[in-house]
Image (cartoon, rainbow, N blue to C red; front, side):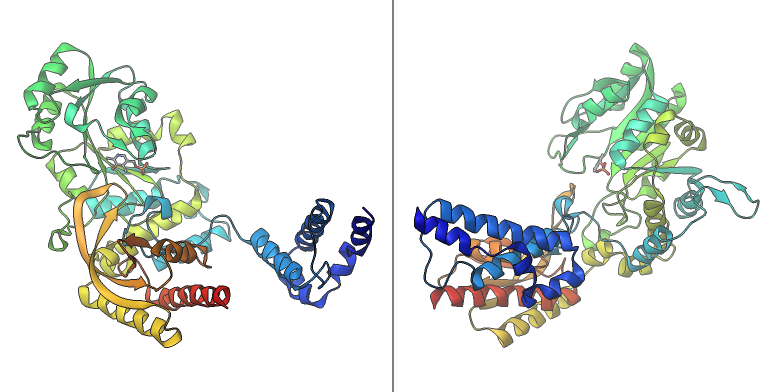
Length: 473
Ligand SMILES: *Cc1c(COP(=O)(O)O)cnc(C)c1O
């Protein structure tokens, strides 16, 4: 008991610790409150240890380790929750890692519009109120030839708005083969309910004919023919589906809109790179009255849902009360306009929009990155066995489910270190490096990694080898 009292007396005061010059650097970049909190927590921790009777070694109570813990606590407390990571998974549209990286021009435009007043809803020529829809509508019309366009919060919101504005209390006819669930609880039947529309399933899982739609129209009060692109699965074998051309004829006959939920939002054909997704324009040309797609999948822009097509339908969506709740903010509009602008020249789009440049990245380009990373690692540590492997990447984000893009990975292995340990340590680095494990190796896929990130990956690995060295010593 006496001993405990003795130790408690030795505990330093917060103010004393704050005078330690090893903490001075932290006051420059952090609020004082945060540093004080870290010191308090350390002292509280020591106090609990004393009270629990834990023995302390001769070095005294408050030693080098306390200072290290305080420094780590300050770093933890000052780290943002939403952080940059290095995506070395090879999955391009990685939903958990934020889907699409924006182009440089889009990033610049976001920063510019964020920092100042803008023409968001102001027509400078007339000195009057303008519409936020105008900024991207002109550009989308130009690129797709559509009559009109509107963009909302995401594609799920676009589907919801479309159903609410065009098919409330009416039948929406969908093939049983297309009742899709997109990750994160977006299910066509449920969104239908939310939109106040009545789901009318037709056909079977593998076969739906245009006659099935026709029968449903004749049997009820149809408000929409909805075709959903099965972007995250494929039905193969004994199959049949009604084409957009056929649905267009049928819709025209009965005055019912044909809506195509395309999801992926591919703007330029990428067949030569093995991507057999339909483009937005192909869907419009085939007869869809409205095409709906995501902003941050294959389009390569910010999170958004874009609707293009017939003016009469788009206008109804613009004027629906939900449009106000689902509308885009100025930052997203700035990014979206800049992204679409890249598509005026498709070649520029392929090199400037990260999603597209990653898809179209050549084998040689990825090989060069891999060799460069391998050299960087081996120049700094001999702790790892480093090799270069041909691997397969994916588009991800629920796009092109059975398509694997042949790529190049740097494969890492180390004696006395499990792949799990390496993978975990890479995630703990700053910035975190997200890799994947294949058998005994950790793979760093070069398709989704920027050249500028290679030194950061090498440093992260060096960090692991040094830490491991310490623990052996
Ligand atoms: C991805 C997708 C959605 C949902 O889009 P979000 O932008 O993620 O809301 C809806 N429909 C289809 C067919 C999709 O592929």
